[in-house]
Picture 1 (cartoon, rainbow, N blue to C red):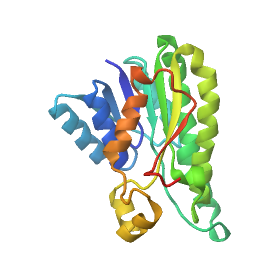
Picture 2 (picture 1 turned 180 degrees about the horizontal axis):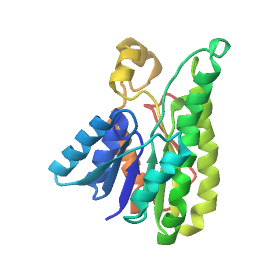
Picture 3 (picture 1 turned 90 degrees about the horizontal axis):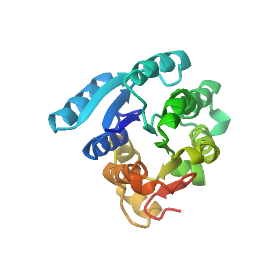
Length: 239
């Protein structure tokens, strides 16, 4: 049974990915930081449905705390699937953006990617099989007003994805990024009216978390073993 870690697993998109990986036979570590109770509920739900899951909690921006938490997980064996899904928004137009808004968003999405992924690489490499999936955004591909910090953080993941893919290709490990557009969730439902979605999205609807989870599950599978270093958009033909 392959072991998968999904950061930000308690959120809408992370939860869908956790459920799908568990359905596909993985043991899933459902990660959370502030919303540990939701992560526990999801782990219980997966186990009640016959899957295998457990909860882990740490702040991905805290390198020492992350390393300690991951060391405990690695005592049980290599983690071969990593979905770097943790991320935050703190939107403001650049002229009015505070330094802490910039730093915090970068810290979670970009520094968090390093803090989580780097300690897992050598054990993963020893198995000669691995899947690293970085959750990005359409904002990193096309930009978005009020999200210079978020776009920068996610675009940084694109470069890291391509470089790390080259480093790990000979070890049977793929590294890819998924860049979703508007995906249905409580947050996006509040931010995007039906009229706005109709104007922005040629498909005239928001995507679903399960559609993104299906793409993540494919990239995490044996069938995707020759796909690496790619930034894959899922956005209803927005761009």
